[in-house]
Image 1 (cartoon, helix red, strand yellow):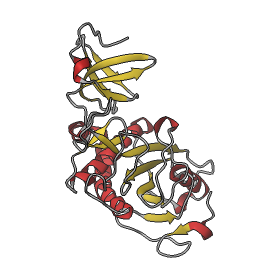
Image 2 (cartoon, one colour):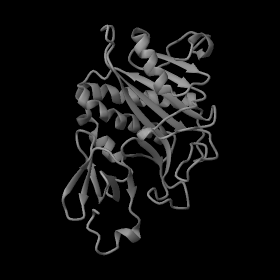
Image 3 (cartoon, helix red, strand yellow):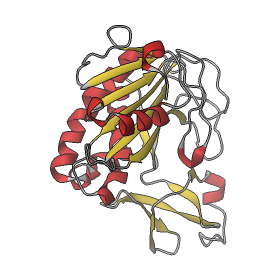
Image 4 (cartoon, helix red, strand yellow):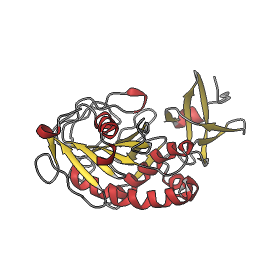
Length: 290
């Protein structure tokens, strides 16, 4: 864990202050992973990291995404932050919070005029920002990612089980390590990372209030509407098999629902969803699974 005396900055050296709508925001000059750092701090001092605390790094050197994929950005050019949530609902419902967070990012970006959408299960993309199509992505480009990790309840019993929600948004980059990535600046809407955090916080706290009251059932329609692939034909690699179908919606669990080419419904709990190109959609003889 990073020593607080040397690297924390929140309204003063080594201190902390409330930043609406969050209960606490601490900014580090650098760290390995904000999720890992916040997990460790919550375990060590649960009372110091209440619901809606935020740990942010200006330079995250060992960021990770889903499936432990590396996520690296130049210092100061991206929002790299982790939020501490006490969901106050049964643990099996917590996975839907990644979709809730993605919806918050989408709404924040739409409020700045960008055509943003949710790429299930935990990414945010901006549509129609590129002339060239990338296989599996079309003209959409990834601008943000979400990573949720559960914090076990302290053995001493002086703190509730919690969730760390990592949010990364490409803000000011102009160069990208993969062809399907973009940034707000590249899309013509530059936003400073600290400003982006506040915009997301406003949207997320409102959505969390609804989720804590009624669960994902109250937000499923809004997330479904924001899906980039709703009504589109996609393919997913699942347990070594290629599943092809049209996206028709979400279940209350957050699972993605496909209508396969043979008409059967197929529910996905995880997997990388790729768009099927027009030539592949029109190819004869595909039975949707191989």
